[in-house]
Amino acid sequence: MHALLTPAVRGFVAVFVLVALGACQKSSSNQAAGAIPPPEVTVATVQPRNLPVNFEYVAQISGVREVEVRPRVSGILEKWNFTEGSKVAQGQSLFTIDAAPFRAALARAEADLVSAQASLDQAKRNAARLKPLYDARAVSQKEYDDAASGEQVANANVKATQAAVTEARLNLSYTRVEAPISGITSRALQSEGSLVQAQQTLLTKISQIDPVHVIFSFTEAEHLKFTRAVADGTLQLPKDGKFDVRLKLADGSEYARPGKVDFTDVRVDPTTGTIEGRAVVANPQGLLRPGQFARVQLSGGMRPNAIAIPQRAVLEGPGTKIVLTVNAQGIVEPRPVQVGDWAADEWIIIGGLKAGDQVIVDGVVKARPGSPVKIAQAPAAGGQPGQTPQGQPAQGEQPAAKPAAKPEAPQPAK
Image 1 (cartoon, rainbow, N blue to C red):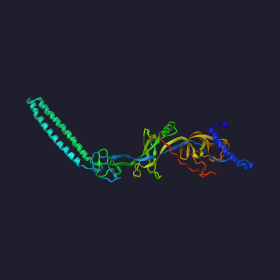
Image 2: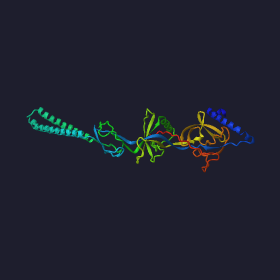
Image 3: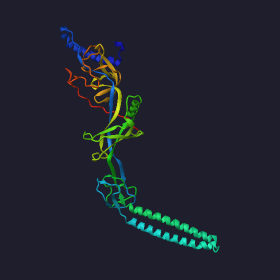
Image 4: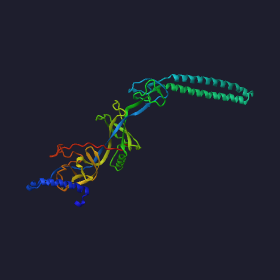
């Protein structure tokens, strides 16, 4: 049997032998009196089951629409028309730029239009006067062609001056800087009396914060890992990758309203090696603000027919993870296992165990590889080992504290 053990298991057995020698020295007097009864342990019977999958990431809040407000014309900022940090409606006036130069430009354009229209009327009269003379061969072809061309040029000038009037009116209207969307403003970035440049000077920002976007990222390695898990059937994602979302805020509280993942980038950010995901969460009370940090929890995935055992049953062996099992003869056998992710207070086992195996959960210190043990109880792996059916701890055992859950990483839907 010794030759069949792997080096990792042999090393693990060696540790238990040292412990056993100490125990034998202490119990020499008891051996004289009679045989020592086998130690009592609690086991969990391995039963594959469907396990829900939860993932957790650091996330940052942003508005669903965030707009920079910039002037469309250059000029002197004359007036603020809003309260910083307040709600504004689309089309509401935020700033006023000095309009006097633009009113003058409009008047000049309108005067040019009147002049162009008069020239057009004159050209039309000239062409109309020469038409019967040309028909009677009283004027030359050139004279008539010049008159017709003069009318066309005058008509084009009218259209050009009409466009200039339209532009002047637009520029005059742009002196009233309006909110492009409804939302909440940031602070004003330019004081009254400042010279602002068209399309360049940033005046303020507006954010729509109901709902909000929750931006998070997961690594390229996680993406590959979970893509393979989906391909081999060990992981099932929700339909269309629409994970359910819950938020944990900075004070540790959970945000009351759930959300949904609605986007996953197809690109890997070359600077960070991460892929960006996004969720949408309702925010009618304005509790969530752009720039705020939170932890996002994704749920809705499933691991079908997964094997999971309590974390305290998994021991560190030389270069591997080991569990102690009890065979059909009641003998302790060390078993190397391959572990996956954590699921609450359990390890997901991806290799080394099968359905029906009995894994020692409590009493590991008393169990020695190759020695018999007495099984106190054999609940399912998903239950609470070490408890009676009525929920009380088994005799001689103390309830174990739950270790902190280790976050997992998904491959949200594309």
